[in-house]
Image 1: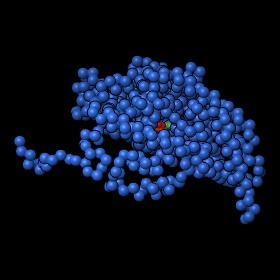
Image 2: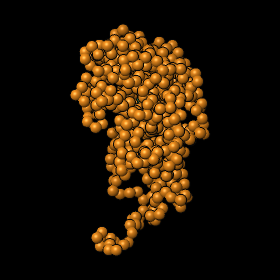
Image 3: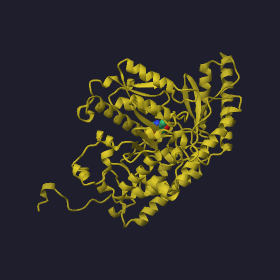
Image 4: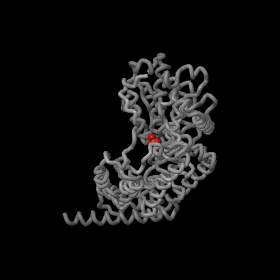
Length: 519
Ligand SMILES: *Cc1c(COP(=O)(O)O)cnc(C)c1O
């Protein structure tokens, strides 16, 4: 054998001497490095807990420029001497400032505290670096994901032809729902094969219907699918921010009359802002009558499936053609953990591709399960393991009950906030959000000033880092929003938050008045 061809140097690669590590063997996870892995993990966890012990707010309040100044001056060409210094550096660059979703004053977005069991699962699958795209890279992991998919297709109420796959989130699930809807309508209309031939001549007449408060990823998906954002027709909602089915019916007729082709309806089971759940049963009947694909975006409300008390809010979901559920929201799983479900698994043919190195057709014929055939992704983390370990160790009821408690807490928060004269709550809550604004009794305030005060409240709270709320705008009116996803949050926490919000609102209002009198 001649090695000349490769100009090989026989001496193996050695990491630079000055580094803490001095053996290549000590760099990698393997059966021999147990003590090193434990040491690194302990040091990492100690650093995290040390940083947490020095903090008492969900956010430090630092401006992004301030952190960028620190981070941009790191010289990536010069590695740190030892691991502990690397961790100490990370403390100042990230840990000391980052958002703490487990803090009871974190009330802003749909981020959840995570089950400790799920962290253990993350650790296990990361050590082994399992990738679930094919059986020959994952073994039992493929079956574990499939078991969870089967379990949730049952919870949804789908029959045996159903199937699904884990996704990166509700965004990808919405994209998949619309992709299958598009390809199946094209096939129905003239046996058009989009996968093979691209979009048909009538593509610009295809229309998607969804509520004006559905997730922005629907517009984004329409754009990515070549249908354009204009293909998405927004349907008005009622006073509870649920889609108006009357309006939906009328719009379908109107579009058909105009020679357009409505082909899909996206119902939202828990809108991001209001937690409102569209009337799925009625929508399903309309879809059935007009032959429309129904996708239910249950990214937020999916865990209702595990609640005995409120599962009926999702009634009709079993009639959907596809469903998306985010486990990284109401199931208390670390990001990312999410899944997409199809009522009829035959539709997966619209995205299936066979690569000879990965998931050859022969595998399929022999019955070897390769999940890549159902996924938009190739290399994919074993995200199912966190949900699996959580369910095996804690059970489904823990999740359902936690969500029920949060729903009950937001109702009490609604009563509390509504009883404050300077707070205007837009509507009673449904899932776990409350949308409201600071509204002082001051007839001289213009809408713009009022909006500025509410924007100012959110900004001031962020800068203090103490209580974090989100904001949203409805018909040019600026609102604030709290989202509950932390089962440890108490009514007292919300009372504290309310006091802070009103106090901040008052002081911004006063300074507005002062500024005005100076002009
Ligand atoms: C969060 C959310 C999404 C997006 O999900 P990601 O996991 O962030 O991609 C979609 N729809 C609704 C209703 C959501 O609340």
